Image 1 (cartoon, one colour):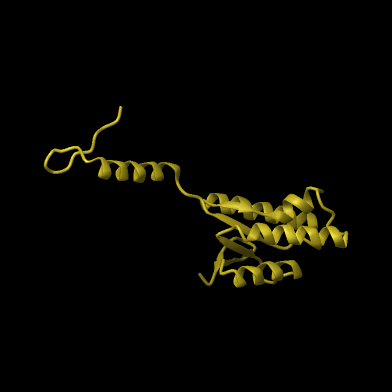
Image 2: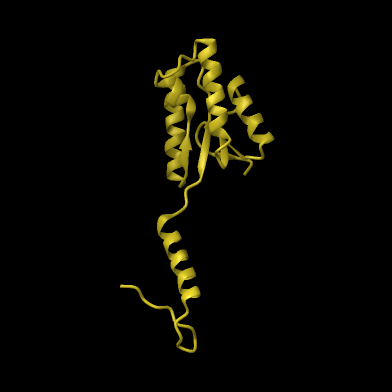
Amino acid sequence: MNAVYRNNEGYADITAGTAIAHVVAAEKRKYRPIVYICSRYRGDTRKNAEDALKYCRFAVRKGCIPIAPHIFFAHSGILDDTDPEERKLGMFIGLVLLDRCEEIWVFGNELSEGMKREYDRAVRRNIKVRTFTDSCVEMGG
């Protein structure tokens, strides 16, 4: 049942009614920004993948949609991170996905070679950078 919005004189006001309906609908669907999860993968890949999944869960709890290409492509076995050509392709795909994100969330105290490339790309593209500890505590923000 659609209620008709009426102005203070009692006349139906379609424009105001439509605007109010859009605001109510937006509140119901809650906007969720897409954020790029930048974290270490090389080295202890099992632990680093578990950490990346933890960071993705953290982003979801914060109302965001996380993108973690190193988990999807490398850890899943779609690409072999130990093969230089496949690693290069994985980094390229990750940077393309990064360009479509509103923010990059960088986790950890030091940047790996791959993380540095992602961070530098975000800065060049004016993508908002947020930094977090390994325990998901935001630094400097």
